[in-house]
Amino acid sequence: MEDHWFTESCEEGGSALSLRIKAKLHEEHTGFQKIEIYETTHFGRLMVIDGFIMLSSRDNFIYHEMLAHPTLYTHPLPKRVAIIGGGDCGTLREVLRHPEVSQVTQVDIDERVTRISEIHFPELCVSNKDPRVEFLFTDGFEWIKNLPAGALDVIIVDSTDPIGPGEVLFSRDFYTACERALAHGGLMVQQSESPLLHMDILQNMHRGMKKGGFSHLKTLFFPVCVYPSGWWSATMARKGVPIDNFRQGNVENSPVQTRYYNSAIHQGAFSTPTFFPEQLNLEES
Amino acid sequence: MEDHWFTESCEEGGSALSLRIKAKLHEEHTGFQKIEIYETTHFGRLMVIDGFIMLSSRDNFIYHEMLAHPTLYTHPLPKRVAIIGGGDCGTLREVLRHPEVSQVTQVDIDERVTRISEIHFPELCVSNKDPRVEFLFTDGFEWIKNLPAGALDVIIVDSTDPIGPGEVLFSRDFYTACERALAHGGLMVQQSESPLLHMDILQNMHRGMKKGGFSHLKTLFFPVCVYPSGWWSATMARKGVPIDNFRQGNVENSPVQTRYYNSAIHQGAFSTPTFFPEQLNLEES
Image 1 (cartoon, chains in turn cyan, blue):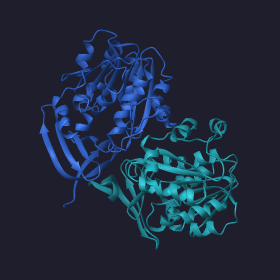
Image 2 (image 1 turned 90 degrees about the vertical axis):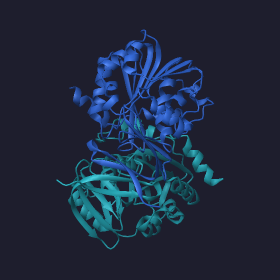
Image 3 (image 1 turned 120 degrees about the vertical axis):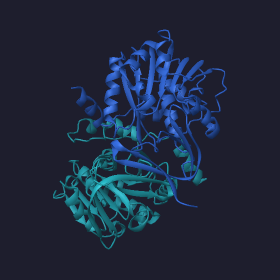
Image 4 (image 1 turned 180 degrees about the horizontal axis):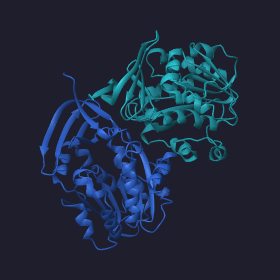
């Protein structure tokens, strides 16, 4: 077999990650973006959008569990959930493991991501027929703006990087709309890039969420081996209530089978490297 | 400027990391190994040994702090410390920040690593003239074997991967010698590779340390962005005493300036992904 690799270059990091591939399984220009699917030698299947790795079969469990469970277990009773982006359905699968959740609306602008994931990542799509789910293939920002105030308990923003279709999801206006759509005590969480490479994006997100009206923010840290630097973050924002405890007993007695997340990981993920608040504050002063 | 990259391929991961370089500053065959130094565009300087990235200026603080501080703050009074490997002197610098430490012996088989680090990573070598330090350039395993029993409080194994000169440092005989060299309650800590890619090495290390006589083990997790998968671990082993608390007050009141490590990170680093004990036990049953 020849030696083939898929390589993603990270301009802002001066770095590149390559994964050895066996075959390209699919390539498609959807009108919104270019989607590629590869079979790798060691990371299972790989989804790439506009040249950026979205997920691999091997390590996506960490990202999807960390985007869903810390936030859902922080909310006392998360019934109404929205996922903005998330078309691969991995986050959705984790959300649907929570029996308290009565309704999930997943809003991804590009239906093809979901259709392709159903074919190439069927394990992420096992819950797509759950009657609690509604799929909307439209603009997530517009959808959020038109919701009644207080309509949601949790908003999960599982988007691409802040370039292309995902850019608006990193804007102050989007955070204002999310804050309005959440009930008191409601939470949003958004993937917030690499703490080593993207402190500028993290600073903008923290500033935008505060200006959008969120009174309490916390960033959590976890590995994502196929993203630049291998070290990733998500930022949680809450309306009117501190983020200072979680339903620890429910986590520890849960029948949900997780591979990364657990009660200790929940607490550990919030432990903050010394440089992080220093660099956040630098920009604000 | 032309587009030059240094690339490290990870065979067992089917992955490769590339860093963009401005210049190769040094290359030398030392008799033990080949050392290269590059100037990168975004990661500062890079040390490469036998084709494997050892450290970058940009992110080495995480690795060196996590190899030194969790273990030194777990020991109630770490006076006598040995570093096996560690020739770049980054771990040594962190160890010497502890006023309780009265004596550090650093044993690296290859003097050239230290001499090259003094030139290209002078910031890691600022404490090399500290009167508490003794440098030995010899075989670390032989040195440990010939110590009087109970001579050390802490052993830090800051070695290369378990191939080449570093291989013996992953053997049961080495752990037996370390256990003998430590006083009751003494600790060893060793870098233990990627939890995603190297569970086989972690299993062997846990088994070897137990067979070597260590009664208590714990693995800690942290990012190392320039190592395969970006997610790394170190395993701590203690002689006769559980690893269940640390000098938290000393950490919180320390004048030591750290960039990653702090009291919350200490506790968070021990939070264990759900799959980790499952995969460790699989191999043992």
